[in-house]
Image (tube, rainbow, N blue to C red; front, side, top):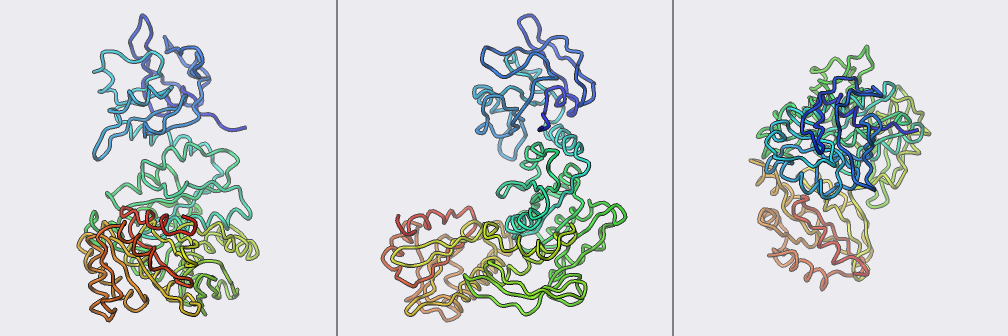
Length: 507
């Protein structure tokens, strides 16, 4: 039986006040009962019109869905009015109510300024909605005392690693994971409210790169026992200003782990100097992975077979295991090692680990698609940094071409790189010049990629500076041939998936 979130629990966990509106009352009732209480001293409470889901008692009114985006509200939803960088959730309360929200978590100051509150909605009043939301999610997570939480952070590769770790641990455990690329301090709170007693392990992608303290606050709610740090690179440099600040931001995960005696483990990419140094910041047990024999888990004899996957030997506690995996690109060795490390620390054997690693469904970011005229598209348009773009070009270089086949790349802007922006695009341009037969760049920043590729030997007649995505599509539709391999790569904001959709086979 699933655990249910009740209105009484919401009020008590958030330390809020239930505003009980009715025909003859418009006054708050302050509930001090514990979240698990079955009854509350209700003076009066909202009622719903016929056909609605709101029960008469807060202890029996259950909420199936909690959101802070009014566009996601459906009947019976709880809407949390969170403050934002550019807008305030309180400005969208009327929309949420119109869509059928049963409960609204709102700031007390806002509520007392309203001439009237809809009597068909339960209004929970708090001092600060984000703090209250954190308290609610923290209370819910704390109900599951046997749950092992794995937190994953890093500049690039979090989603791919989360999916592979999930595939591995699912060989033995009932696994809960955060969806898609949901990883921010705010967006993970409603995710945690979906935890159930059947879940044995929760794998959470934890983003950072906005402000100091965000990851620490998230860890206080989620309480990870295993913390996996992948890398520190220039992603979010525009916000965090320096790599040292980014490293400090990511290190909040390992700082927040329980001590080694309490079972805490900091799983660190030893090949990244800034990540490796984080072992000095935690009382958890450090576990290093990478390409050096001195690490707890290390890889050797790496081979990449392009779109046919990778092969390497994993070494752990004096034993060696040769693995052939359907992961794409040499950089995927570190992704695999991270997943292996979590599997080993959670007690899986090598047969279970290998079964998870060979799950083709775990490859989520880079997708291979049939393209026009018998070409093949390597769609890596989800996001981009200098590191991931070079890795994608490395994969393109490893592809075995059929006779007369060519390597083409459409590269767009890489965003949020701050002072590293120009150098990042130059790095990618230099590698592109070594790999591609044809290069197409689109976007103001991507022009630097094209210019740098020209400086490093790519012929001008095989470099296209496109003014728009429509121009790229027109060029590709006339140029793609059988045997060609096309890489599409840029930051999410460039939306190059629009190009992919137009040049896929059958479009």
